[in-house]
Length: 100
Length: 414
Ligand SMILES: Cc1cc2nc3c(=O)[nH]c(=O)nc-3n(C[C@H](O)[C@H](O)[C@H](O)COP(=O)(O)OP(=O)(O)OC[C@H]3O[C@@H](n4cnc5c(N)ncnc54)[C@H](O)[C@@H]3O)c2cc1C
Ligand SMILES: [Zn+2]
Image (cartoon, rainbow over all chains, first blue to last red; front, side):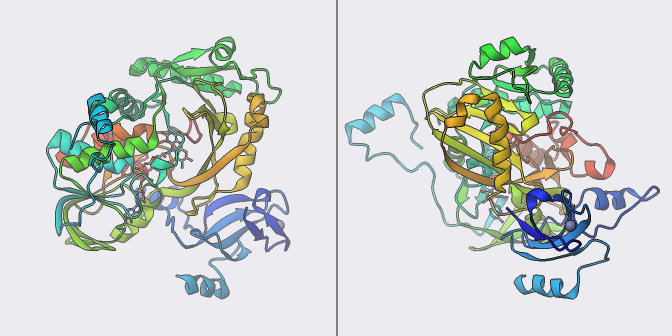
């Protein structure tokens, strides 16, 4: 059972209170984009064995989206931050690089 | 290789069973092979077998980072069926199911194929419509399945409570020649036959890099040195994205843990396989008497071979309503495997952007049943450059929007 802290309401919650939302910081493509762009956006994933950034929604709580940095091989969590950002904060990048 | 037979048993019994030879050799890797297959699961071994058997290609090595059959092949709940919705799926899964019928004789190895029948329960009206549609599709595809009503369900499986308040049984899709097989034996049987054809199965040897020259694969780096190859096939299930990264491309896959568990052994009480897709649970009874139960996948990427506990809890909670007698059973073991899931829940059997490199992956939660057919088709693709069975399963279908959408048909693990 994963325990993640929602950065919006500050609660440390169990994964049953959350909904997973897949790889974070995907670049979105809309109508008129070419096939390669759609394939990238809709299907291709890093799917790494190691540190990753993924979206979660605090569904049974405040309802807001956030991003968690987690190691998929060990389930170690490096931290969480609000989804309304272009990328991870420095302290998370550093923590992830330390295990790579 | 000495054949297994009743005479062999008598002969060996007469000399205190000290004459049995090893089922496969464990050779040192050579410097070069015509074909290297990464991953000695069922699919990798079956591909090697049919390369030799159907196409005469025997200078083949199968590289395995752990022990052969130790991945999902040795962790699954062994359900075999071919009642899929889409035509390309029905073709490869039915080819596979029909190969299972005679696999023990073919390999001279008892894989314990048991066509005891597979029943997929309809517990919502949506499922009733869905399975009736599948039954009609199967009729056109030449796959023998039938829609059965609740009374017949009760007859097939008397321990079931068909009047559950939350999940009543409204009928089912019945495939009488579906069933189970012994998972380890499938891997061992193919391994023994491959070794007998002179192929090398190299265990405890992890592929750590892929060398290319001008866009063409030339060798793999392994924990036991560099080994050259003419063709390379990545058949590593949950680790496919990791392998693709070594070759410099990404895949339309997510790897997630899928769990199963078995109970203490009890007397025979259920002689078919039952799948309850609405509640993400399925169950059969092993020859040892254990109830074998499979559950749902985690919702997020994971390589831990463990899985989240609440999925088991949800599966059992729902199964107890449909099978009240299991409420008092003790569960003995629980485990997980890492399954590689595609967007359309169909596999990938394909060439790749790297010349000479092939991929067989994306079987996700349901590839045990496909092992013989997948190996047959993959060998043809590698030997001839094309196969009617793999034609629709190429990587390019995701770019082109030509999905083989099985998530609409079952939408569940098995
Ligand atoms: C709990 C569970 C229940 C299931 N139930 C069913 C079921 O009832 N019916 C059904 O049809 N299917 C079922 N499946 C799915 C089925 O198990 C898989 O689709 C199938 O076994 C995949 O076989 P494979 O040979 O492709 O992969 P695997 O058996 O996983 O083999 C891949 C091998 O590659 C090796 N490998 C990985 N990376 C490397 C590397 N870099 N170098 C060397 N070797 C490497 C691994 O060690 C592994 O042995 C289930 C799966 C699970 C986990
Ligand atoms: Zn919150």
